[in-house]
Image 1 (cartoon, rainbow, N blue to C red):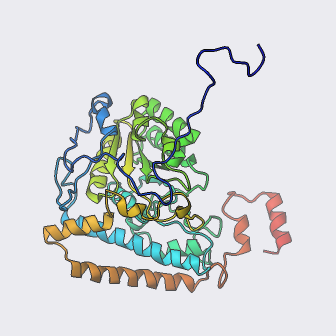
Image 2 (image 1 turned 180 degrees about the vertical axis):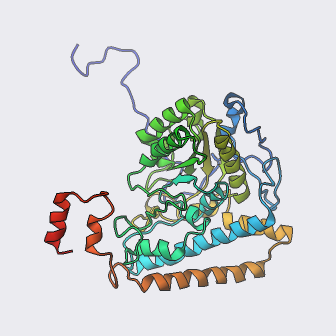
Image 3 (image 1 turned 60 degrees about the horizontal axis):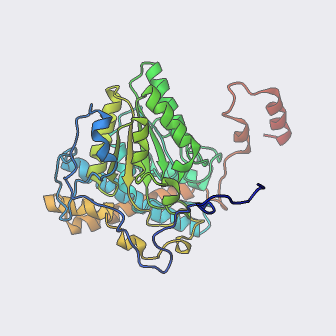
Length: 416
């Protein structure tokens, strides 16, 4: 029987290619997102057996209900003052995004990536960490820096690659780095830092240190082999690491089903490795913090890794080089059932009597003034096509403790 000949009662083989529920022009549909009532998902003990909490990988932990009230066993991890601070962090990130997106459109930088709709994930998570803990982020976790007090001017200097760029022009815009703020250098090669975070956490344990690591990955990048390799090492050696998957429903132009496959949820991927896995409402600042604090405590108590899936939505384009109207309905973000993280926290604080619409408008103006002042200062040091640039000599610095002969020759030839 030759190649291609059929001798079977079953007919030819077929291949399954997942299709999104809607296309541009269709009516947005999120009926597949099953949302439990706020406060209905139990909070297990921190040392719970992973086998006994498997259902948390298929539900969604929520604290804020539709009326803006904090309810259920996951509520109460933050004070009013901390919530007000968290609201300002998210508002700052949103204002920062707006100005930097405009700067890119004006040709002041080559590239930018927004966080619209995802602000609660990184801003709330950072408040659950301690000094010295290390994040291995993707390009949509700038809230980790903002919530830790990293200067906006320094972030903008990096975006503009100007003479004050802390990375000396060696990185693409938005790929920040700050060891003092626990922010490992961002990699443009997606998923590589997932397994690096696991390795860093292993090293911390080997050294008998007290610092933990946090790995970050997007839903699309879970299709990369590094994601699975990281889970193997995390499940085997049980290092102090929190494994974060930000499920914002879309990769650059591909819906989440391509990466998720038939697992049902991304959190379910952790179950096969024996790792406690939870899903949380990524647009609920209180829920994100509570779940993050639970996972961080597990890591500090040597109880091993925890995998968290943040169910959220990318409102804007993947980046300034992406046009989402080509692959999803234009009105889809309006139909997202988990709402806007900034508005939800604002309404909660108003309900507590700690905030008001008037104070919110005033805070928006104050935040924007702060961002504009930082932008003015950063642009005084140069932008993409104007002003100061990093020195050419910086190309040769910061790699070797002692510069090798061939680099010394090249530097001499360059006259720097």
